[in-house]
Length: 229
Ligand SMILES: NC(=O)c1ccc[n+]([C@@H]2O[C@H](COP(=O)([O-])OP(=O)(O)OC[C@H]3O[C@@H](n4cnc5c(N)ncnc54)[C@H](OP(=O)(O)O)[C@@H]3O)[C@@H](O)[C@H]2O)c1
Image (cartoon, helix red, strand yellow):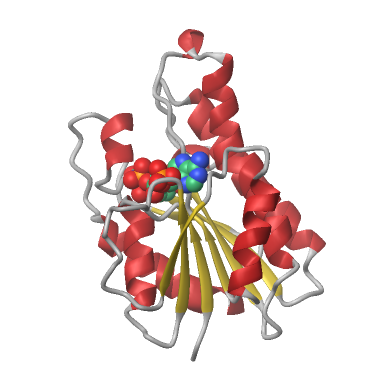
């Protein structure tokens, strides 16, 4: 089955692996959006990957997304994987720290999703938001992550609200709250911690869920973690 997939936040870590795994099926067209793809060569081996420069945190995210969608056409799967993490004691957080966290982790995601729903494939669109266990209600919380985890919690809440508003359509949205995965972001949040999960393993789960999960879940906030953090 041929699908058009957009992965937002795809130059490294889990997002890069998600793109690679979707691209392994040559029937798929994969749009890999990030700020810093250019010249990395990480995805050069794939003829069916289209890397485009998109900065989710910028106020013109709507226009950026419109120009991607003009090329991409209709969309079957959107994975909102971009994330920004600042690790600082609460009292040291600046206005810009909090603003960039919210712009990247929720505001930009909401605005770009507005554009993608207008281009939903006739057979349906599954939107998968990538949140964190830190944004999941009632989980253990960690110092230094107030801006990051609260903005990820907003992404969880948005998922429920979106699904309610679109429940009569074939556009579905779910949210995966990830536990620790060995990436640069994890090292920033928990220096020296060794995670039990590698990016390719988590990507494998996310790819499978994005293809099959919409038949079983809508508006759900699902923990995907075997560790704390
Ligand atoms: N690793 C973990 O343990 C863990 C745990 C819980 C949740 N998560 C979540 O999983 C997702 C992937 O995390 P990761 O660990 O793979 O992080 P990562 O290695 O830091 O990768 C983050 C990705 O987001 C992109 N990104 C950041 N700011 C962006 C912006 N303004 N516009 C567009 N893209 C942007 C980055 O690309 P550019 O820099 O090229 O733009 C990069 O490709 C994130 O949403 C993160 O919050 C991760």
